[in-house]
Amino acid sequence: MAFRTVFSSKLTDKSIQKIFVKNHYGKRISCSQCFKKKILWFSDKRFRCKTCWSFGSVTKQTWLERSRLPLRWWYELIWNFTLCHSAHKTGKLLGKDGKVCWQGYQLIRKALVHASYRGRKKITGTVELDESFYGGTFKNLRKKVRQELRRLGLNKRGGGAKYRKQPVFGIFKRNGKVYLEPIPETKAKVLSPLITQRIRLGSSIFSDTGTWYAGLVGLGYVHKTVDHGKQEYVAGEVHINGLEGFWGLSKTNMHTYKGIKKTNWLLYLKEMEFRYNNRKLSFDEMVEKLIKILMTYRRNSFVPY
Image (cartoon, rainbow, N blue to C red; front, side, top):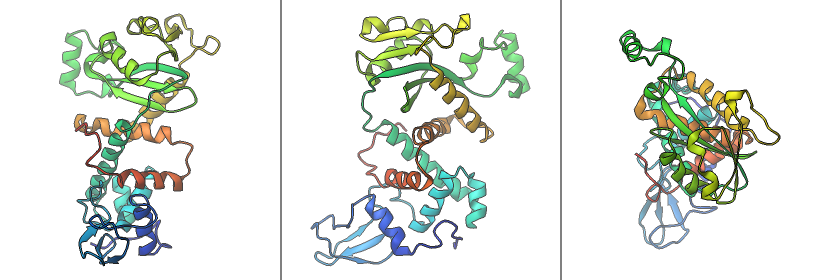
């Protein structure tokens, strides 16, 4: 099915091919059998080695391996994803079925989840810790659900959040990147292993006065708190305003999806993490980074699904 070009109108097929090849093989592509660089192209993806005559593909063992759509379409889709266009709007722009665009978006999000877990180093320096609950407001729930929550006494603000919302634990390096992890509950037995796994011992940790953070000093961290219950939000350099700002920004952006299935929820959460961590990149740089993530070796990636 043909599609319209919006962002790649001035690029030739060879130019787009070079962009994807560069982010997977480097400057020049080589045969996977004899490692020679004499290649005969058959399409934008498939090629044949002139030395051993074995066939190969640019997208082999990458996230785009099973896609039959051309690289130009993926280039257009990645640009639309970068600009936060909905799948429906992208379908209208490209003259393609919106469902096909949504499936492409989901593939990009799955690649972002893998990239978040792969090769992550321990965080050092000044770190902020906080947890938040994601989910719809009480008034937007179905009538039967609201009645059941009222019967159980879980309709008040905060009281029933842990039963009807998804808790998320956030780690934010001051003036740096954020790392998010969905958790079953906000307790020390759940958070302590995540903290020791992700944060280097001796780092300065700022948090609120939650009881689940009480043992951080004994684990080997410098721990300081602010008491939100006493309207204390900043005490010198001690605050968690960086994470608080991220919670508000991510929830506002996720509201635009008008409801997310539980099975897809992690995909959208990690999308928010990626956008925030790369907020200083230009659109061109973010497109380049997304192409690089999609062209990584999928077989060696961590698979949370």
